[in-house]
Image (cartoon, rainbow, N blue to C red):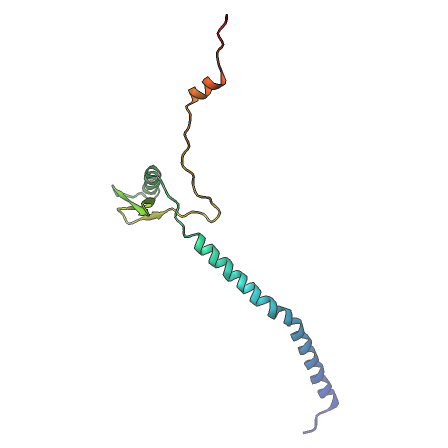
Length: 133
């Protein structure tokens, strides 16, 4: 079958358009692996740093258990501590509810409670009495 010059010219224009489109995609071939590698690195960092448990005091765990009981109308009468490395990180209710305190990604480790002076001693330091002669 004999093809006309216009058909050949049309196919040639289509091939030129296709090659120009492929040339525009070359930077994406370089950019996409970089973006995927960055995403994988970020996801790895996020999931490994979010797995650290934040310690709780026994009082905090008890308060959280009471909040659980009130919000869920739980009828359980007891709870037990969940410990990791001798530190309380959560609690488990008798009803089966489990709470574990995870440290947020951006949070620092909690510091020990500092010695807090009483209000009276601060008042005494600020307001000294002078004896009159």
